[in-house]
Structure formats: C-alpha cells, structure tokens
Amino acid sequence: MEVWEIEMSTAHTSAQSAKLILDGQEYDLPMTVGSEGEVGIDIGKLRALTGAVTLDPGYGNTGSCRSTITFIDGEKGILRYRGYPIEEVAEKLQFLEVAYLLLYGKLPTKAEYETFVASVNQHTLVNEEMKNFYVGYPRRGHPMAILASLVASLATFHPSPNEEEVELNIIRLIAKLPTIAAFSYKMSVGQPFVYPRNDLAYCENFLHMTFALPVEPYIVSPTLRKALNLLLILHADHEQNCSTSTVRMVGSSQANVFASVAAGIAALWGPLHGGANQRVIEMLEMIRDDDMDFQKYVAKAKDKNDPFRLMGFGHRVYKNFDPRAKILKGAADEVLGELGVEDPLLEIAKNLEDVALNDSYFVEKKLYPNVDFYSGIIYRAMGIPTGMFTVMFALGRLPGWMAQWKEQRETPGGRIGRPRQIYDGETQRPVPGFDAR
Ligand code: ACO
Image (cartoon, rainbow, N blue to C red; front, top):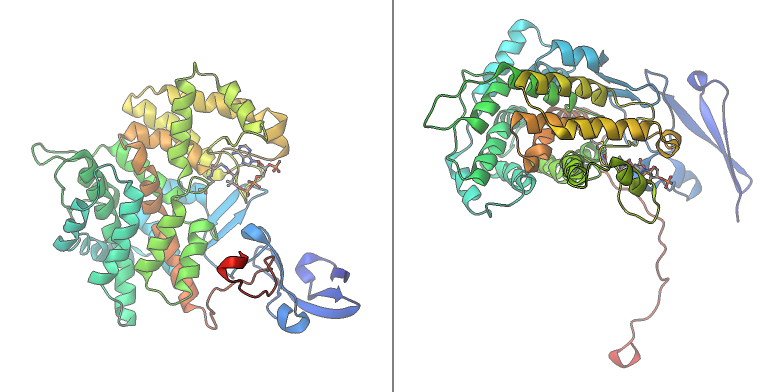
C-alpha cells in the first residue's frame, strides 16, 4: 500500500501550498483562504497529477465552490447573509429586502426596493392553464410533490431564450411561488383559489391567498405577518446545504432556473433536511399521545439499535447552537402569546430540549436544536397545516437557491458538476448464458 503524507505550511492564513507525498513522490497543492480565514486545499489538479481522487461521502470535507453569499461558523453559531449577522437581518429587514440582498449582493436603496417590489407584484399571477394541473392531483397528495412539479412546469410557460428572460424568470419565481403554494393548500382543503392582491405586501399576500375565503373579508393579522416575515428570512439561505447543492448541481448543466429550483425543492423534502419540520411536529404529537414521556424518546434516540432520531436536533455544520433556532425559540413564545394559543407541544419541545442538552450523548455529539425544531410550532399556531411546513421552508429558501444558481452562472470558468467515485464492484467478467446463471 502506498503511503500518503500531507503537510501544510505553518499558519493557516499565510499558507501557500500543501505538500502531498504519494508513494515517495512530492506534490505541491495550492492552498486557498477565504475572507473569513477558511482554508482550503485546492485539489483541482490532483487526479491529473497523481491519478488519484479524494473520497468524501456526504461531502463533509469538500468545498464545492467559492461563494460570497452566506457565511456560517458552525463552531461559534454565526450565520451572516452578505456579511450581515442573521440576528440584525431578522430584526430590521423585510423578506423582499433580504431576497434582493442575496440575489444582487447589496441592500437595495429605497428606490431600488420599490422597483423590485413593483416588479415582483407584477408577476404574482400564474397562467390560468396552470390551474388545470391541480385538479389532476389526489386531494391528499403531498404539497411538496405538487410544488416541485408546478415549479418545473413554469419552464413551459416562461422559457429563458435570453439573459433578459433569465433575470425576469428569477423575479417571476419569487412572485409566483406563494401563489402556487397557497393554491395547493386551497386545493387540499377543498376551498376555492384566492387570487393574489398586488396592493398587499409579500407576506400579507401569501396569508391572504392562504386563509381568505370569497364569502367574507379577510384582514391579515400583524402578528401573522411579522411571524411569517421572520420565518422566511431565517430560512432564506444557508450556503451549500443539500438542497442548495442540488440547485447548483442541476444548474451546472445549464438547466433553467425553474428546473434547478424544482430539483432543490425535491431535495429539501427529505426528513433529514427541510422535511424535518413536519417530522418534528409528528414526533411531538407522538410524545404527547404517549403520556408526555419525553425521556423515553430521548432513550430511543440514543439507542444505536433503534432508527429513531430526535427530529429537529443535530446539524452538519452547527456544533454549538443554531442561531436560527435560538431566534425561533423566543419567537415561538411571543407568537403563541400574542395569538393567545396554548400548545402543549411547545412545553414538550422545551422539556425535550432541556433533557437533551443535559444528556452526555447529545452534549458529546454536539447535537443542538436546529431551525426545524421550533418553526413548526409557530406555523401550527398560525393555522398552517403540518403537511405545508416544508413548503413554507421552500418559500423562504427560494431567494437563496436562486442567488446561488445566479452566482454559479455568473462565475467565469464554471464546469458541470460531475464527481468521481471509487468503484467497488465486480471486475470485468463475461456474460454467461441462462444455463450458467
Ligand atoms: N438524534 C440522535 N442522534 C443523532 C441525531 C439526532 N437527531 N443527529 C445525529 N445523531 C448522532 C448520529 O447517530 C451519529 O452518531 P455516531 O457518531 O455514534 O454514529 C452522530 O450523531 C453524528 O450524526 P451524523 O448523522 O453523522 O451527522 P450528519 O452531519 O451526517 O447529519 C443531520 C446531520 C442529518 C441533521 C442529523 O443530525 C439528523 O438526522 N438530525 C435529525 C433530522 C433533522 O433535524 N434534520 C434537519 C437538519 S437542519 C436542515 O436541514 C434545515
């Protein structure tokens, strides 16, 4: 077996190259350092130089791109959009300002913001023909499946033949996703679709389309509007997570924005990713119906022979706390208080968090509540059904997906995403006839 040694130059920030010794031969691999001091070994030429590739299932050690959009320091619980701390962004901005910031790299001036909002408002309607799609789905069909397919279908109505249309399609998607999501909710509860009202702000419009009925006036509650704005902002981007990497991967083949985002929605749906918000509530309900015995579920989560995991706990990057979960825990108290909702699930969640945070299993493995842990309790109090929770996540994540898609597209020298593998299967052998199988 050949021996590899890898030697990096001294201080991380001043590192120039890493030395790799493979089978006695030395190779210099260039180092790269990000604006926050993150160090990467550039292995772009590794295979050409050595014939070897790296192996990193789950990509826990692989930087797939350079990006200027979002910074996370998982050890310190830091999340920043374009350099702005999430705590400040969540407190001071509207969701569409955040969308603009992520997409275009700067906060909009008042005039730029007004133009942006006006162009989003111009595109909130979906083509009437799209309504036909909804009737083809079973009433109980999961809204994430509907969302992914309808977003992909937008490409049939809005092709992207030139750059102008590409930019416009980004605006169109921001404008239309709430309409598509609200229509799928209406379909699931057997109510008539409520069309967008362009005199309403983004969050209010979604709440209007979701909860209004043609038979009576609907006034959007300021508590719901504020809560939704916060939830969408906290979900708006999270650098190279599973769904965003999917959007980039699909986009790397030069697929259009609708196809790329539809793929991201599909990736988000999984219970280890955005689908966890639905699973958290289902888990809390299970505990409620099981005599509130949360200790039993903590024990199950620790049992290696039991596939059960505490949903809403753990994160690939955060190893201290998830700053979004911290904000949402406070918001859950506030929103439920303002709405006068008493939900036993909030108490169970807090108890579960306390037990887990003081248990050596969770402490040693650095498992903390993530963004999905408290978001569902707020959505529930807002009257949004559990099946729609991951759709709400997608509404929030949309600007991040498109900002990443756009950044990749605009970065010179981009290549199609195409990882290698280490093949472990049979070596070459002849195909036998039926009599020899
Ligand atoms: N409950 C119990 N044990 C857990 C949990 C959990 N929620 N999460 C991780 N662990 C354990 C694992 O069993 C593993 O133990 P081991 O080292 O003894 O084998 C160790 O902690 C590390 O876990 P991994 O699965 O290797 O961590 P990874 O970074 O691959 O996965 C993930 C992260 C998927 C978030 C994981 O923590 C998990 O499944 N959490 C529950 C689902 C969830 O809440 N997902 C939402 C994440 S946030 C988001 O995507 C928006």
